[in-house]
Image 1 (cartoon, rainbow, N blue to C red):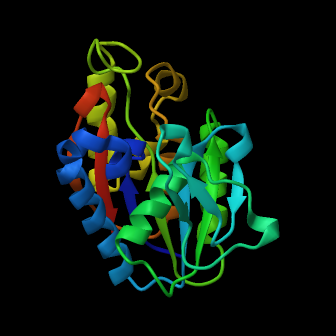
Image 2: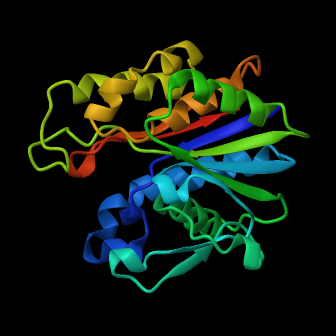
Length: 238
């Protein structure tokens, strides 16, 4: 049963060592992520599942203690997904989204509750996203989700995906849906449009929608902005 969820963006720039001199620009975003994860901890789940967008090699399950690295972003910094060491069978490197989640969990001192990760491929069809979410919620015990993912990357001409006039409306709709725990609105986010606008959180948000079916959770939007032309939002469901 899903009892709580937190949604956070996953740019490596969240990690101050990666952002370097630009780190203060995202202080408010880091603070909102910390608050959202604090609300997850307050729900006292039996297990935490971390979802994040992933390329082919990072898809699928990642056990507690799985390693992640920011060396690909020029920083000699390693993290692990929750406390402990996954051992030889769990040494597959976390995708960047889950590495950022691991950093956030370390930063907030997450401990005690078992953690597992799931790299979600993009584009994963909506129907399959909902199925995966339902399977997660049907697992044993009280489940919480930490859902990583960004909005569009097309808000300004300097954005990674350049400017697309459709991006602002997509971000507005997605942020409202996350902030109000509107499952129907999340389910109807357009797969092709999200792909065109490089909104890599779409599939993970729809997994969340599938997991939250029947849970009667309420949402709260803690942050919404588009620094660097990319839509970032933080929400908490409980």
